[in-house]
View 1 (tube, rainbow, N blue to C red):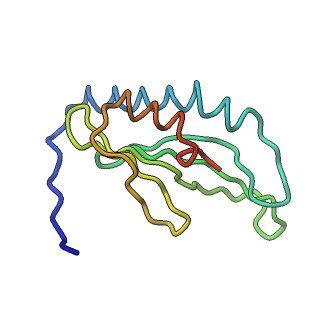
View 2: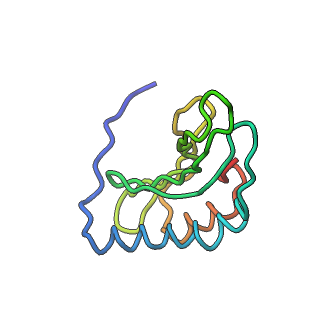
Amino acid sequence: MTWQRASRPPPMGEAERNAIVATCEALIRDVLKPRFLPEIRPTDWNYPIDIRGDWRGGRYRFMQRYRSGMAHNRGEEFDAPFARLDRMGPDRFDIQWMRHTGQWWRLHTGLTLAEALHILETDGILHPV
């Protein structure tokens, strides 16, 4: 196996970043939450309470927020990322999936934002648990 240094994507303007975030948040609001979290059902274990996103360093992570119902840590919350969009250039994205090992795994490369969001909506491996 040969290692190669990844090149940095070209810089992005604030308007492009805001458009990406707004589009991803619309997917969460209009598709993911209604389909995968129509209501919150407390349990004695960890249970999902929200689906949200987070932009960091050219990447947008899709996360499910959990709350603990266990006696020893009742009410504590944590995020579990399940998919990520990596901006590789103007309107070019890679899709990463969070494996059970805690490592990101690239599943798709070189997609437009529209293509990437369609895959996030339709590919079951990229859906929240």
